[in-house]
Length: 483
Image: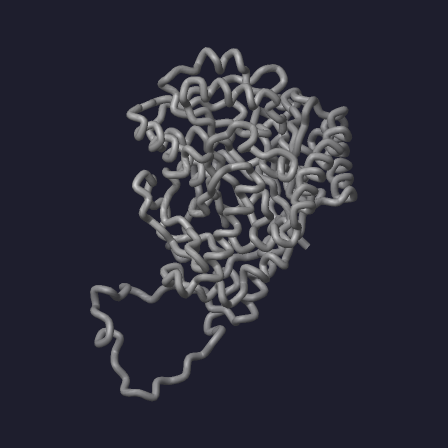
């Protein structure tokens, strides 16, 4: 039952304890004798008084209210929320990895250094790049690293370029990353097919462009068929062609970005290679580069010398350190296990079924919802809800109503206003896809016949429709104790 869980202060009972600390058997000292008065609070902290069972049941019930990939279909477009096999968790929880200190001497970390070195080689083989760094801690961090590499490359050539061109179909972090690196951002529009407009791009390109950033397939779920022509245009002005690899799930085993002309590519391990994703992490965004950019990779780099693996920093053109250490070691281990278990043939099936599932769902739904870009769908697709916006039954309310059917909402209002962006991934069964499509088709019927049902959704959650404007403008950030 989705009842609203009281907060711990409401459940508090005076005098109730979860644990009783034994009386001191040593000479008693006052708190003031042990801790200087300036560090002491003026009054006791007002904490709830609960038994251990109270606390366990409270948090267990809260956990059942969450939507998660283990409990629900999670079709967030552009996020690749796939199931994470539990064997990956077992691999990442091995004592030898959990007990490895990040500052351990390389001689004491040979096993994991070997795994990192081999993982880099796997990524090289999968993507067609020349070398990889595993240091970036997330996709956006990888973007920033890639742009810094492009900047260092131009600087070594004696150039100070100032512009970065990004299509309107890009992920929102692309302009943020390039801007953070000090570049001026310019947007190239898409054509009627949902692909980058080559004629517009050609007019924008000159010797002041440092890089062109392209997501392929793009956020419309469309493969950029002119990608090699785009690469040719970018390289003709000496710019770096940057690939956002967030949608690599559609290409694994079927196409390699390095063969398509990209010079830099960040790869979201937490998306394509089945690591848990969402809630701000965990994440990992390794960056691959072609041969002419290898000298600029960040340090330290994992290098094999004879039968030993070492962390080397003596690369004079490197952009330097971007993290203190390989802090996302657990993500790397999950990815390594995933790749080894699937093998070459299994990895190819990722893209086969991801693309098949998306096209199956689109075929079932596009008769009920307009599809702005119906051709060339890869791993995800976009449905427009613009015509229902003024009726109050658009994308936002569709997403809320889906909660009543037990589904988390797809991405809404991105990459175009008033839309649903749906990515089923390859891990979902036909039964799950059909159940989700059936729910959306039932909601579509309600939009015509019972619109108030949508306007007041959700109905089965602990709290129904919230006043989002007031929540944003007047957030309640204090607990009952006033802290």
